[in-house]
Length: 599
Image 1 (spheres, helix red, strand yellow):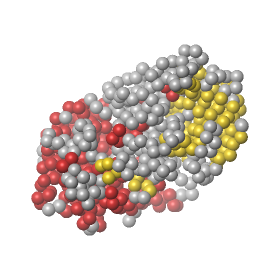
Image 2 (cartoon, one colour):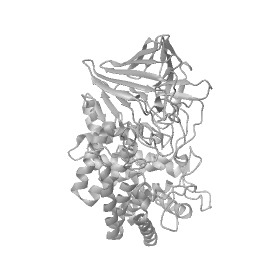
Image 3 (cartoon, one colour):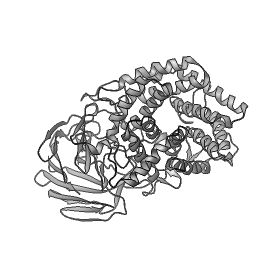
Image 4 (cartoon, helix red, strand yellow):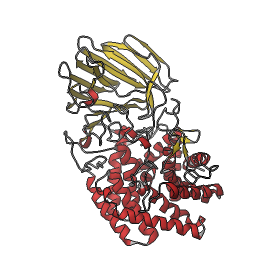
């Protein structure tokens, strides 16, 4: 057994343990309980496909019976007369029918021989009803782009299974519409409404988590299932561009995405994963196989007690895990194994053992700063580190306080220290209540670096994070990249602090670290959460601090301003993207804050 097979067995054993078998109520029996949400997710029957894979591969009848029970549970709860499946028993959203259909068609295509003829026909007819629904569901033409692409794949698979050419025809029509949302540079946009719209700054709706874990893998799977070279070429180009956001520890930089409220560092809370897409397209693209391997190793590292946890430190923080992560990603592992792609992962494992220095992905091989026009974002190389600064101003549907704006440093990652700075939600809100979880503990705070002050009413917070009108200026010096930001402190409703709200910040990215200099009014403060698990030792004084990482030290040296730790070494944390941090604050002296982060 290899990495993929071993991890799939760990996850599916836990899914079996959480399946309801002792209650005969049809609304409960067969469903899979979620530890974090204390309920049953409507999409838990996506585990049918990985269950059937293991029933076939291991000859284990427990998985076969579990798959049958899941199918029956879905029919009794989330199935609807029009052929659709709703997302949850308390949700009327039917778009997720695409994901149910994809996994059911793959289950029958690869492992249908395990089922008796009556059961096989029943499942096949249920897929046909769903395919009819998907053919006529017009919402896919205007909703988030991942649905348009995944429905293309779902209909192609249905056409192959059922012998209905009209499904494939509709799928091809939708895909051709969707690829129009891949920019000239290769960035897929459309995770927001309108899907082809522009923001005030000329940005497009982009979410890297969904691009890498849902949309582009489906596009590549469609391309290889159809055998159409045009789609392979388009898909590979987009995968290559999006690979710039995959970090060398397997994490995905979605610190600025439209839907980063679901960011888990390794991906997104309810999407399927990037590994199958990259492995399918890996021929002639060594970076693809390397990226898939690194991401899968991160999934393994974030697995505890049989479950995939939603972030680097979510388990350590004492949070329960949402089971959605596990059953969604289990489908991808089954898909890799059914296609014989695990040998690519085994080769990567062997290369890792043989090479003295770890293989660097494209992000860490950058020699010059890359500007992502679609999101007004800079990806900045620093030798041993990489950074992200964004002015992205696309506000997701009815979501205030989502990703950071304002020329914010939303990511700092070092090859020995790991994740040092990350930008989660500016204000944690459960934008998708069924797909997110409430924090269990106190000090669940924003982990994004920011300027901040509180109004005289003691309630209204003005922050650089909400400044969608800031000006960013990029320059190169002999020492490295410099990003200068000029803006106004703004509240969550985009009201500007009129008196004393102006700020300007200069980020200098040099070989040894990052220098920051800020001019701001005396009542503001700079909040600097530094990612650090609770086992790491930290020492500090009035001029800064040092954090002892496993393979490096992170130093913060304050050159101007008053440095303080409001909670000392006790950590704050945030479920987006599942990290804990030491919260530092720097108060300006004579209107100036200056500090350096070095390694």
